[in-house]
Image (cartoon, rainbow, N blue to C red; front, side, top):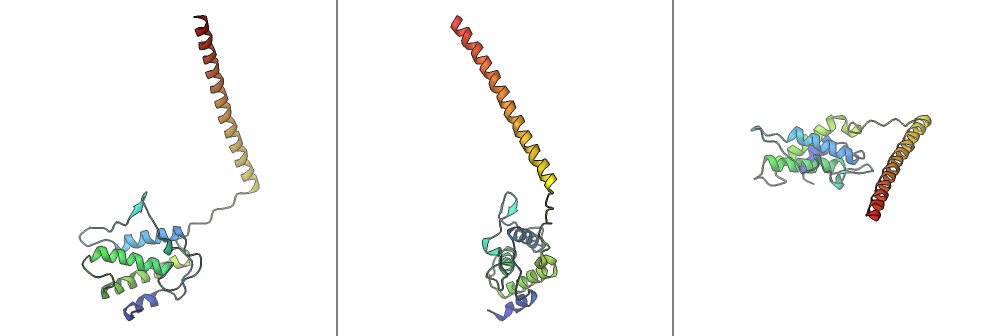
Length: 171
């Protein structure tokens, strides 16, 4: 690899921790927001689906990674390329200036606690047995009420149809 990317390698740890899809989405969103604004007021708008950034498959990794082929390194590399292309549309993708941009992205990721799990959502508390039982009872009772409503509607409809049928037979 080129020596000009040495600051990127120095900014990130050699072995990067695993990253989930949700962490990748949150990290990309924050990187785009932090680095994607121009001085003239224009803002980089990444492609989204229902308002959320679609993290690339190569950004997620269940195992520790190194380099820029998968995981955190790939996320930093790809997001820096997208913002760099927005900022400098006439420059080549691996222009010497891009190496400095990618190093800034890497330093930003390393300076936050993202690599230590800072973007993970808080763990949900496991419900107690009594809470789970209460929730299950409420669910069963709600389904019973729905079926009783359907039964009542059906009997009313059948009563009306029988009355209509008897009126038609008499006529």
